Every structure is written in structure tokens, then in C-alpha cells.
Image (tube, rainbow, N blue to C red; front, side, top):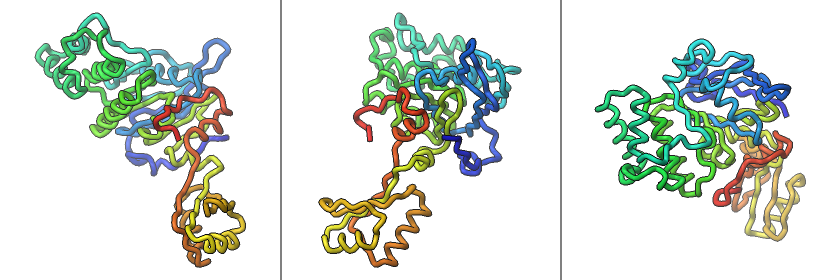
Length: 333
């Protein structure tokens, strides 16, 4: 399936706002294996952008290039207004990175981890202590601050990891699978933290193996497959690209149901549930058309629901069913 081109006027920040992250024709190969095959990105400031894809699709490689950890083979890349090839120091001063593996030193306390980051950012001692105290409180780590980090739970270590990332006040944060391995409660806590960051104007570039995580958090989602962006858009736009959507009409009166079934010959009927299913892409325009037709036909359902494919369906359709990301049980659709 080809890329879905969306108008930039629908993006948060509008078409005139300079993007926080942009890439044109980004390419990267390792030997004869092409990992990124000319991808384009434009991420408005103050939004969450999620990059989905099978294992080995190139998500972490993209993060490493955008955060100056490795160089691209080709393409133009700008982060926070700086060219990553010409001004990597400018990029590093504006970003924070939390990788798949924690950067926390388990042998020292949470507070000492934070103060170490403050020293690395060359913050004055008093400023470092102030920032450390504020972030430990914000991430609910004040009570544990004097304990060795190796005694922390997985969720606490992840919160400390992100708190350390924020010591330098980055405006763009790269989160590479930040909730992998966390229990459902810790994952939801992390989602709340990410939402707070964005509310403060921070831009978040998120890679994730959890489909519902992208659905919950991302303003826009791109699906990476075979080194290319297979599709990009909001979660709802991506879901509407996949066939299988429908409007379901449910009736309580069997006579009304039979009358509606006779009038709606293209609808699939469920005689036991007294329900009809009308194919639909879920768009507002098509839903309005269906409602107008029902009014004209004098059909009044007791319940109307719109069903669209979920990101699970989108992922399978765009990647050919390869190595699906995780779908946690508590929110799986």
C-alpha cells in the first residue's frame, strides 16, 4: 500500500510553523542491507510523533541519526532548526534521548544520578540541586531519592531515566520504546508523563512496540516497513485506509428490523441481534450520507455505532503481517 499524503494544514502548528524535526530523503545502509530508504519526516513542535514498524524496520536507526549518534548516508535532516551534519552540537543542546536501555547507574542513588546529569550539563551547583529537587518531585521520586537506583522497580527506573533526560531542559525528546517491559500501571503512568511534557510545549518523537500506546498518545503516526514510510497520518486517518469499517444499526423491534433489512439490501443482517451492518469508511461525510438516507427511508434505529479497523489491522495491512508489535491485554481491541 502506498503512502498516504495528508495536507500540512491539518497538522498541529499549521503549515507555516517551522517543524521541530524534518528529514528529506533520509537514507542509511549497513553493508548491502538498506535500513532507511529515503524517508521524509515533518514533525511540528509541541506534538507527539510515533514511529511504528516491525523489529529491524529501522526505528532505532532513525532515532540515532536524528539525535546525532550516527550519521546518515544521504538526506537533509534538521532538528530544532539545526542541520544534524553541520551543527550537531546545536542539535544536542536542544534534545534529550531516552533509549531502550536505561542510562540509570544502579550503584548510586536517584538524586546522585540526577546531580551527575546536572554536572554533565554544566549547571551551577545551586541550579543543579534546584532542578534535581523539582524533577524528583514531579516524577514522584522524592522519597526514593536517597536509595540506590538498583533498588527501584522497573517503572521507577524508567521515570528516573526520563527525569535525567529533562535536566538540561530539552525542547525535543526522543523516546525509543520507553515502556517496553513495564507493567500496565507503570505504562499508564508513563503515558501521563508524556502528555504533561507535550502540554508544556515539548516535542516527543516516540518509537513503540505497543499499538495502543501510539493510538493513545500520538498526534501523528508513521508506519515504517522495508526502510520506507508505508503510510502516515493521525490514528483515525490510518484506520480509515483499511477496508472493513462499517456502521452498525441495532433495533429492539423485530418488525422494524425486518423493514430496515428489506430497505437496506446491501447491509449484512444479524437476525439474532436484530442488527444491520453497512460498509463504511467511517468518515464524517459518509456517516452524514448514511444518516440522511435513513431519514429519507423513514428508518430509525435504537442504536447506531461506527466501527473502524484498529491499528492492529493497519499494521498487518501495511507490513504484510510481519512481526507485529505488542498489543497489551488490558487495552487490546
